[in-house]
Image 1 (tube, rainbow, N blue to C red):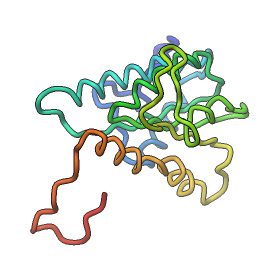
Image 2: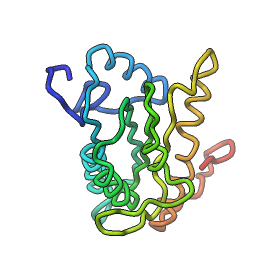
Image 3: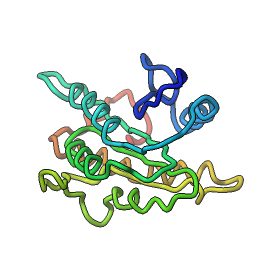
Length: 191
């Protein structure tokens, strides 16, 4: 996009030098602009984009002075995953990083495989290495479940529902705890 080349990894806001969206309204705005210029087609491949983002997260979290950023990757898809084994392996590897993955299914597909990736009940196991994910980092929702005037707030709540606990799990696993509030702060600190 927008050069008529099939790409499985591009920035939905169209800006590779600043690929970030501010909050849910920013994501929705970027998606609405993007969907006008992007033609969705298959195959649906997730592993490459997960590995690209995981590589960025890994670089940020390494070294003697790692920054304490946490990334949320949002994947909007209309199809069934064609690289499921590679995707599961990528998610298992990424579960060690400061990363959560939100997948939003659009359209009429069953999305059964997406539900499997959302490891709420059982942590994913790599079919390649048999390694088990260190934590659940995927949240999946079907867009068709959100209709009407109240869909925005419900969608935002459900999409981000698991992210706070995923962030806390990651930082605790790394022995990183919040700094005590400074005396100039007012109000109650929020995790």
